[in-house]
Image (cartoon, rainbow, N blue to C red; front, side, top):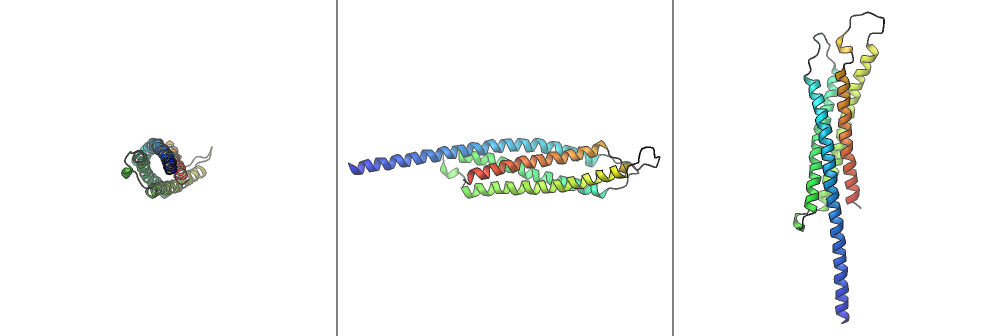
Length: 202
């Protein structure tokens, strides 16, 4: 009788632990899906807008007598590099959704290992940090060019031959906006990755 009672208590304890584990696993799976979709769409929308602006800036005709601007070209290059990193970040956000679905699978063999999950989230962190760095370098180069244009533009009341390349154009401001959107997209992905990493390493 004592053995039966002990077995029953042991089974109850194991069942309670299993239910608690399953409940925590479902919560983590739901969190992965939610964070994955939020960051996926946030990055996708901001990335498409930024990409459209940079594409328009790249194919826009320059004035015939405008001098080449190395700083602006370098800034656009880094901005595009940041967008490429954002594309990788969008893919990783979709991986979060897939991980959430696999964690919620009734078949334990389909569930990813914790180490594998942590590696994916850490990869997301690295990608977004690199993307932010690239985009900020591009933004610094572009803002430097705009500052140079502002400082060397013709003063009021002075009539001189005006170089079109030294005039701040509306398109220049759009390029700055594109960089801001890209940084915001990377920041959204970074926050999501940090949140997930903090949750699964508790």
